Amino acid sequence: MHKSQLAGFIIDCETDDLEAAALFWSSALGIKARGPDGPAYVALDTRPEDYHLEVQKVSHPSRVHLDIEADDIEAEAKRLEALGARRIGAVGSRVVMEAPTGQRFCVVRPQRANFENTANTRD
Amino acid sequence: MHKSQLAGFIIDCETDDLEAAALFWSSALGIKARGPDGPAYVALDTRPEDYHLEVQKVSHPSRVHLDIEADDIEAEAKRLEALGARRIGAVGSRVVMEAPTGQRFCVVRPQRANFENTANTRD
Image (tube, each protein chain N blue to C red):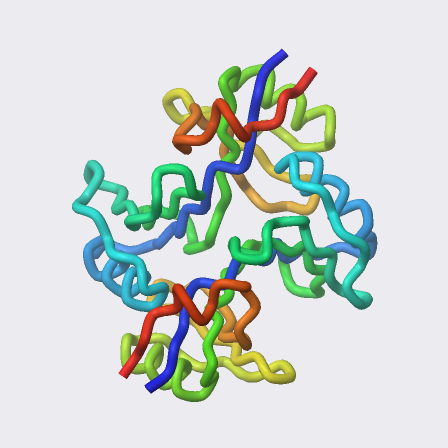
């Protein structure tokens, strides 16, 4: 038995200028940007229990993707495969998957502060 | 002066089977699907003050896009153009725009129950 829930949304930007991308999205959405989180990420300043929002510098075409957080990434990936998703690969601890409808998304470690209380229990 | 904020996320699915797409995303994210909202939308059952999440049947390639809600759509579109976004077109009352980083998004009428209290005031 494990737990999972929607963790948040990542705004993937094909750009060399992460700072400018983060400035646009922060201004557009009206959510303050935090400082850079490593060379590829700027987190927007949402509350710890809310969906996290991040601007990411990527080398593939720009898009928006969502993350699902789980206390057992492998069990969650298997659950999602059983629902029809396809496993694409892994980046560090995260598993990259593709929905039957074609969108890429990631399974990641728990990130929201309310994970223990609000995540869904999965068999 | 007008107000705007991030309204939510739309999971655009290039499919003929909206029901199957909504079932996948509802199961994957652990959020109940509401009944169909017209022929092209199924809303997921988030709280009225939270970001809305919807599964949409589309004819373009699948993606995830975000909506910005505003009490003056034209003023908000102009604000976003000044930040570097490009206006693509209109679908009913909504304006479709493209970020400088390439993602499409929409400016829509207020949808979240907390709009009056939490939206950002724009000059």
